[in-house]
Length: 388
Image (cartoon, rainbow, N blue to C red; front, side):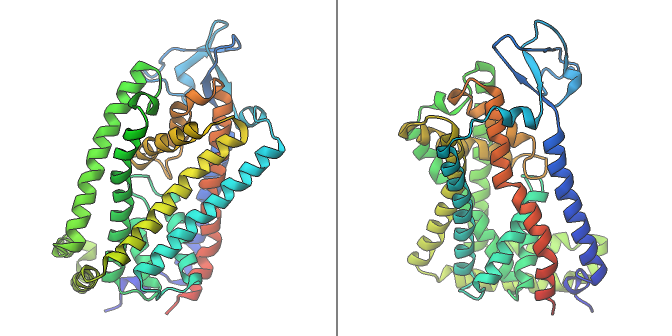
């Protein structure tokens, strides 16, 4: 029987995937650039007042029905051009913006290094580059809660990594990413007071704090489950695959799921025999990648604001909170949620909501949109290169 992996990459499907990918990339970028939202101002230049037009008791900055024209209003409309016009560019700004780009390169370099470690260097640097870029492309198109992990195992399998082992590798990367978060949170609260990690506004602070600790608990449970799956009970993954392949249109490939399960169990045995040095390297590359990711925002803020050493430490800590909200976002790549959380969590560094909105846009232009276009461009070349 023909494998579903082979039939999934026929010529017309490749062309369709490329068209859809580029179309979504262009649509998301256009929507972000053209969208009007409302920002709170305290300098008397407000043009709108919040009226809770949708009656949800939440200030929806992207919902025009939530606001009405008012001379005494404390909100005003804002577009991307308005936000970016507030950004004062200097030679120092360009230096830090180049630094932000360098940190993005480091982020992906350490991801590539990690995937090569986990595949025992079976992936060349070129193959690792393709894998990470397309993985990030899938993540950018997926809701934060889903991510690109569901696609990553197929990407690795396409690079001649047995599907079961590819699944085990994806589980390990997810485990390492969550472990970094679980390990870092206690350190953050050792050096940064709770009140400095959340908005000053009492209502927002209580809500965000509650959601943060609920989210942290969920991540801790997921981390524990992933650890048990790959290191102690790999049969959990096998049972999960068999459960999925009970779906009527997947039943005919159930025998493939059984083979994948065997591969996962085999990979699990091999990984359990790895040395502490090996796992130390994998975790260090994970840390380096995540810290590089976080330093992108630090570099952008330093480009336009005067931050001291402890301010930068505080920003790093607040990004752990920011990442959690992006993780549970139902929108592709955390769009909308990321920009809003950026302004809320970093409001203490600038009284200008418009400036913060402009910096949030710069951040997304550097850390999010490039993957949409790079992935769309690389996808057909990668499929041709890996065609079997």
